[in-house]
Length: 611
Image (cartoon, rainbow, N blue to C red; front, top):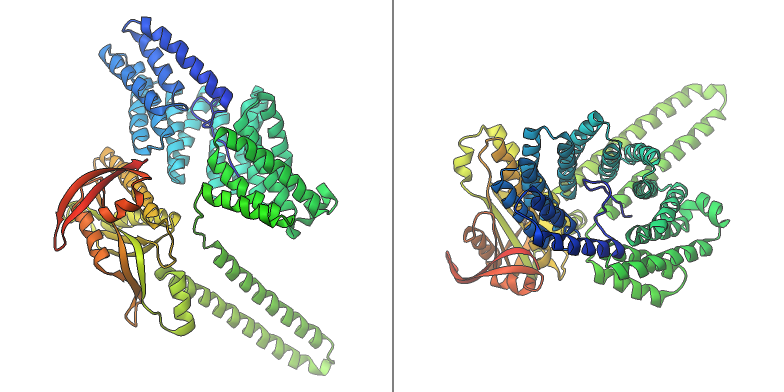
């Protein structure tokens, strides 16, 4: 389900419709004509800033060019407000490119000048934009902190438009955290203010976000109510992005209603007729897919194809379902998800609990039918049953805890093999991509920190790395001091391991650059990272009979380690073997053949960005 959020003006969406983009290009042409005759004064700075902002959704690189030209002119005429605004708009363009470290850099500069000028309105906007960046990085704590700072200022200024927009963004953060009741509370507050302001565009966005939250709560009746309200307004404005989103959300809701678990909603909307629900779902998904293809909304298109495939299969159109599923997989690689195993475990625990409760109830009923002569025996049996129940519950809890600890140490396939057979065989993998990271001057920095602080800092960084590699289906192998090692393509083989690992490396690098900036702002010595990657064959398995450790061996591992030591701080250094797998997907800068210790000359490349 897709959600919308508000940018700093609260009137622009991140995804423009074709009509809005056309208007943007027309505005750019008009501003460019005015720019030719402009003098080097504050008016020219305003024109350049306007061009910078208008380009963010069309051509952010062009927007950055205009923004930096505005910044240079504002600095030359010593116009502080212009300097702040130019930095803020440059940040928006970097945000549009998903270059979050640079976006934060310019936002923080703008914020500092806003504070010096006492410009509270601009401070509120920049706090909101900073919050959006942190939300994009899945940093809920920092996102909420900055959104709340923005909200406090808008409250002081009695700016209802600003308050409504921030309330909506806070609602989305709580939705990210799966706290849907709290998310709905904020969305409804925002919705009330949208209605007071008669702000129909923002009203449509909040209605859609409320529908999404209800859908995630499995309340599809409520979800449809708000989705249809949102759709009506989006159609009034001709906003294709909003229309396709609501079509997709409505199609998804009808699909869910058709399942056996939603009989109440099925009876309400379709008098219990699953086929009608599926046909209605297909109609809306078909409309969504048509618009998504037209405007290039690839992420939404992927989700719609997945739902469409399920609808077709349920209607007996297996050939069509297969074709739709192929379209789904072509739009985006499937993401590893261990929720199924977790769900099965929870179902088993629930079954065991229900079984125990049923036995206890039967036993109690039997005992109640006995004569008074058996009262003492009844008491004994009940006490014994209660003792057994407590023991079984305790054993089940301990078993769940031990299983959880085992899965935290070993891959799920290896853990299951160990539990079933008592041992695990080593396996050969023809193609695996291995990643190493290491902190520069770690020993020197560690001498200036207490042991507790040092461990806390390492834990903070490595926890972030764990979350990143999990998202990209990569297996953590081990940490050695300040070194971190992981690998893609095992224990479950896949063809995207090299791309997955490089994508994870980019996120790790960006996280560390952002963290470096935070530490420097606090006057602390920053941690700086080197990252090395290599692809090739390995042997993988567990070693020892106590304190099991899953590990990998082979020349591929040694070469990956050399890629890290032969790299540079803040860079991702890959071998020629990895380059062959990712050269069409990333911008790579060749370094030539470089000597690697104990290995010899190796072709190396720096990865910059996604191609």
